[in-house]
Length: 67
Image (cartoon, rainbow, N blue to C red):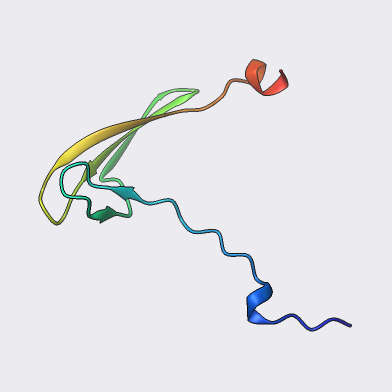
């Protein structure tokens, strides 16, 4: 039997988005839009300075995954 300590755990930090204006961390998008099977668009709003901006995530297609 092996005893595992707290240092043995792997920590995978949650990806964070920073405000494009002031650099404050934004944890959750205000709004998400399904664009297509391979694209999702998010609207981010900074609670520190009120700046809003969009990002778009493009997922690989199956043809690219197989290559």
